[in-house]
Length: 387
Ligand code: 0PR
Image (cartoon, rainbow, N blue to C red; front, side):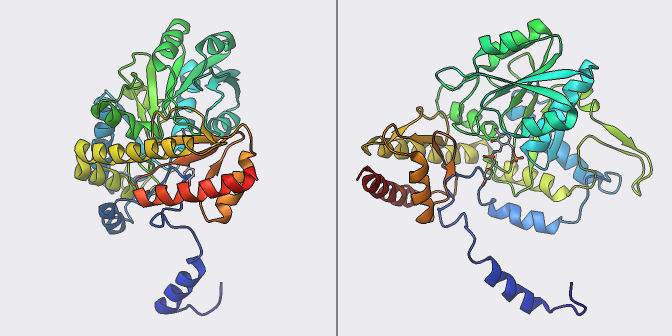
């Protein structure tokens, strides 16, 4: 840090210059990310309440009440208005809290969690931190977790099973009802990671798509991750954890007696946390309503299907699986998909690369013309590589 401070104008100019090379959502070039441009209204409320702290709820009881209401809205969306939980830093923290609650509930020290092979790396981080062994169960040919494999993996040390509603790589939904049956039989905690799918599946169902039960409507589900900073259009950071019963949330709750607002409790990994996130989630959900999200999801799905069709018309390229939501996998049996991704990146398309496929996520900032430009470039690149 220099001794003398710099004036606002100079810093603004410097920031503009320093950051101008980064990608922006508005350009449509971020086509492999699960985040998007926050809804314009959330920008205003976020800034307005930036200093509020949900780590000291005695000082901000009204913000805490809004967080409860936001959780109630999320719970209602996921078939359980009685669910309790918090707005967190993201899906990583939510998945960590779920496994933490499962471990504490089981009272086991030496324990295991079974996750699908497709599970997000946040489960590896959580298991490592919590001293749990993570067991990855194989997928079936539809890229869902194979429930027979999960059954085989159950041991006396197993405390929890995880199902995913919208996998990171392909947006696939695991058979949550079958996992629930298994978990109930074996008396295991079932957590559903709907970080991405939670803000997509209920609206797809409204639109007439066939959506299997994946939420609290399935009786064995103990907790769900749902991230407003993905398809919820809330600013980063805004993840969400929902527990079926308050008693589960209490598993990860700590009494903090000394704060300036008086005695409080924290059931999040972080202590100090901005109330602006919860306020932004509350605001955007009330502003868009079910109808607003339905419209957004309809458009994303329309463009995803258009892209899927376009890809299938390119010789040498195919889709990994018919998309269930606005996530699409691109693969090739004849050309190296890594080379395709490299060339797309050289053309400034920020795609996401998995071991055997390119992942495209058609978020709300992606418009029709972006899909058309992308398909044009993709066509040209595949042509070149085919030689
Ligand atoms: N669960 C699932 C199913 C996820 O896909 C992710 C992240 C998480 C949990 C963890 O969420 P947080 O990152 O909020 O902790 N999925 C994306 C991914 O890793 C996140 C992402 C976001 C990727 C923005 C790229 C990007 O630009 O692929």
